[in-house]
Length: 388
Image (tube, rainbow, N blue to C red):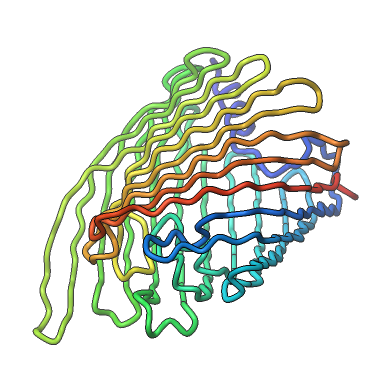
C-alpha cells in the first residue's frame, strides 16, 4: 500500500464522527437537531434502599437540542438538555436536571483537534449510580468538565494522539452526607501502528490526579497499556489492551500525613459482531474512576448490548452492565448490576415508542443484604431530522 493510500485511509479514520444522519456535506451549513421524550415509569425501590424501599410511579420529561455549523474541516456545536423528574410517592426526589455542552472538531489533512466543554447539574439519584452508589442522598451534583484531544498521522502507518481532561465536581448542601467535592485531572499519550489493513497495534500512557475538596486525599496514578485492534472479519471487530498502573496516595488526617504506593492492572477489551438484522457488543474494563465518596475507585465493568431488528418498525434490545467498585472508604466497596430488556416500535421517521423492564441490584460489602429494584418504563421519544 502506497504512502498516499495510507494517508487517505487515516484521513477517513480521523473524520468527525458527529456527522448526523450520514449526510454528505457540501460546504458549510448551519444545522439544528431537536429531540425530546416523555417517560412513564413505576419502580418498586427507586432509591435502592435495603431497610426502607420506596415504590413510586414517576414521569420523566426530556427536552434536548443540538445545533451549530459544519463544514468539511470544522464542526462547531452547542447542545442543551433539560430533564424533569416527577416522583408521585417520593416528592423529595423531584428534580430538574440541566446540561450544556459546547464542542469543536477541526479536521486537517493529517490531523484532528477536538475540544469539549460541559457543565451539568444532575441529581445524585442518577449521577452516583455507577460510582459511589449514594443515590439516597437526594442532593444535586454540579460538574464542570473540559476535554481536549489531538491526533496526527506523522508517518504512513503511524498515528499519535494527545489528550487532556479536567473535572470539578461540587455537591450542593451535602454537609451531612458522605459525598465530597473533588477535582480530577487526566492526561494521555497514545500510539497506533497499522500492521496491515486489518490489524493495528496500540499503546497508551496515562496520568491522572484525584484530589478531594479538603485536600485530605490526593492520588497520582500513572498507567501503561498495550494491545491490538483487529477486524477479524467484515462483521467481527476486536480490540484488546492490557497493562499496569502505579498509584501514589497522600492521606492527611489529624494524626499527620501518610504516603502509600499501590499497583494494579488495567484492562480494556471490546468486541462487536454485526449480523444481517442484529448486532452484539461486549465489553470488559478495569480502570480507576473518580467518586463523590471521597476517594478514587478501582472499577471493574462488564457490559453487553444486543440489538435485534424484527421488521421494518419493530426492534428488540438487551442492555446489561455490572460494576465492582473498590476503594479506601467503607462506602466504596460495592457491586452493582443493571439489566434492561426493551421493545421499540418506530411510529415514523421521527417518533418511537418503547416498553422496557429494568432490574437493578446493589450490595455494599459493609452490608449483609443487597438492595434490588424492579421497574417498568414506557417512553415516547422524538428525534427530529437535521434542519439546515
